[in-house]
Image (tube, rainbow over all chains, first blue to last red; front, side, top):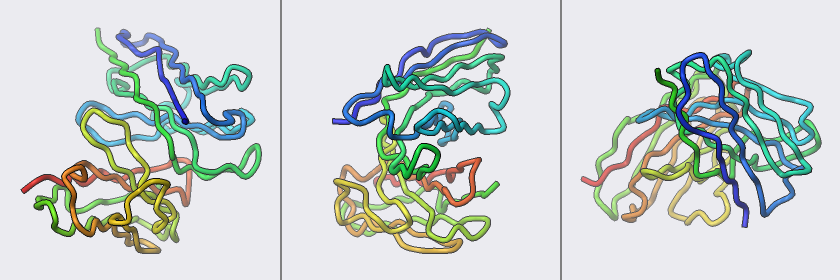
Length: 125
Length: 108
């Protein structure tokens, strides 16, 4: 069974940093692009960032560009999101998710077929 | 950025009734649209991809249709477990990937 387990959430101060992790199992992690999607309390879904299966291509929402960095360690089957210069508006549950299909190291379908349970990030002074 | 507008915001129906949810894109996205279901306290679940393809394990009462700018998710007969929030998502032109604002299907 595919499993995605996020960790690293918690309370951070404005301007602070956190690193989220997503441990993957049950599929060939190195073969699939991955994503982070967040959901502010009581709000809808917001795409944050994608990374290709090789890790060479990364994409970001404008709201986090320059502050967040997505990365992966295919030897550890783990996805990361380094968050810095945190803002109150970054408060959300952060989900990692697997893409539905991959056609090569840099080409994939950003539809998400498996999601983790989410980790809550609260930014507050 | 492609904006997805979902309507209605809330749909009040009874079990056994038919649910019709709409998602409109701000520009032509061909059929590059997915639908997700999210229940309270749970992660989203993929229902439909590429506008009309059911994901693995999704019951046949869920169907998707549409192309271009107008898309529909239909639940033929609502089961108690179908009361949830539904989101559409486009992958035609990204970044950014975008989601609609959601439609809540609630028990009448």
